[in-house]
Image (cartoon, rainbow, N blue to C red):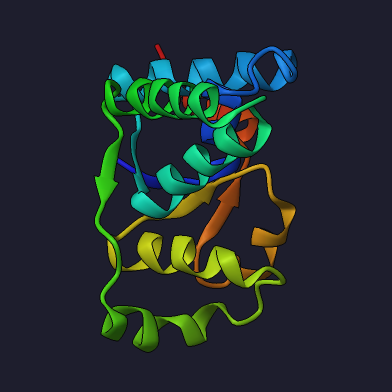
Length: 154
């Protein structure tokens, strides 16, 4: 069974942006159904959960509401079968980050390193810049992976 890393862009659609992105939400919801039924194994990291929480804070009218949105979003992820990786050690990051210097956004390096050291086949993301590292990790959108999984269902 394949193991994939879920990027923040997917977690956002599943939790905080479902109403703003209904087409993407349909695919992401189907992906999470596949995860919870063990058709695919997925993990994310504390980096992604932190970014999800920050997004809630930054887009809410005040801190109290942002805190509630962030906690609800993280809770929704944590009640699924998605595994959560710990933060990287300085050594893990230093040894592996060279593989991902091609990423145009340096904040994505911890996600890529986490995916690599935890044995993921690829990263599920809406961020196209992950295409820059397909020599190391596959990059698929939720839609692409759902189509692949559905094609193998009886």
